[in-house]
Amino acid sequence: MFYLRLVLVFAGIVALVLIGRAVLIPKSWGEYGYYRGGYIQEEASRDLVYGTNKSCEKCHEEIYELKAEGTHKRLSCEICHGPVTVHVKDGKKIGDMPVRKGDKQIELCLTCHAKVAGRPEKFPMIEHIKHLEELDVKLTHTCDQCHTVHEPLENMNIIKKMHELRTLKEEVSQ
Amino acid sequence: MKIDQNFIDKDRRGFIEKVVKGSIAGSLMLMIPMNSKLFAKVAGDDSKLVSLIDPKDKAKHYAFMVDVTGCIGCGSCCVADRKENSVPQGQYRTWVERYVIDIYNTVYVDSPEGGEKGYSKPRTDIKEKIKDAFFVPKLCNMCEEPSCVQVCPVAATFKSPDGFVLVDNSHCVACGYCVQACPYGVRFINNDTKTADKCTWCYHRISKGKLPACVNACPTGARKFGDLNDPKSEVAKIYNSKTVLKVLKKSLGNEPALFYVGAHEEVI
Image (cartoon, each protein chain N blue to C red):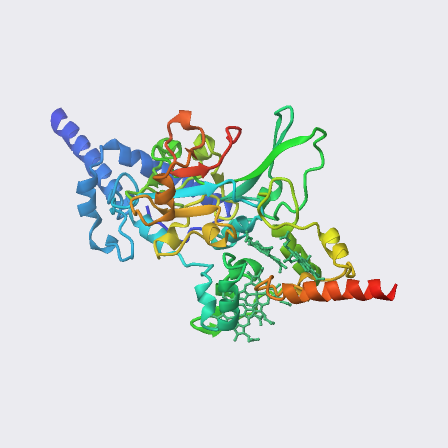
């Protein structure tokens, strides 16, 4: 009698454990190892926020091509603007992309181009004020008054020529 | 345990409930040693993978490389990472450190706001003459032998068969052991989800054939990602060349899959 009860209690514990396991252990537990395998798929199917430069090509072909062949070819459009998913959904424009003008633009260009110790020497860097002084322009000039933002070397020959002509004119008139 | 997939609960009681449930589930599962094959059968049909990826694919050997000589410290990677992975302000899945070494070989390291705003101003507090300076981006090392996985009491963090260390946040009880255990300091308790979080090398992007957000954002190609078993990939070419590669804290034996190109010995 005593043994029967002991066996019953024991069976009860085993049953509880088995039910507990069935209820508490997630479905895909152990699929690949000692963890919930289904999570891998959940993580993998999370939506993207950023696209690639290719995501802009269809609608902004001209800029895409200008940039793709220029000195800024390695830059991601979305770094200077913003993630594509706030701008386009299902092939339609759904929101504005930030376009940096004025001081915001100077700040943007300088995050990469300011001369700071630690940046590789081969990288093109400028000292903001000095750069503008050397070109004899007002210190309020924004970068895009000379550089095409999507291909900053595009009009450089013209700009340089203009600067030369101006210095020449000043020399002549003196 | 019933799992709410989008479990984002800031309420305290819910959190405690989750801890209790989680630890009970954990201890019950430990009562009988688990055989993963057996459980795959129990798991049934709905756990079938429908995806571009096959986590069992061991033919690929993913690696991440950071070329310290190419990094300009612009912080574009950090900006992209925060948006791509909805990382709360003040927390970082990846960050960029600035190393400055003076002529007496004193090493100064700083990382204001994780380098996210870009290093467009020089350090002004160093009195001595500067000998060398460079930027070092940091992110998850995707260790072959991850310490964080070993310490997790509820098996919420694990290494997938294709080599990615991930955190199942519906299972995490936020005990913080993994945050302590990671020798590279890449883990944190996410202020929004209240669970452990860390860089995944953008597993959701690479599984759809896209580069990680930070690699896509890097203007100089200092960050590289690819498959070491694919001889055409840039990382494989570097790996198989004479280039000296460095892993952080090698002596710990974690065997990271994150390699540094051109990193000085001062980098830790």
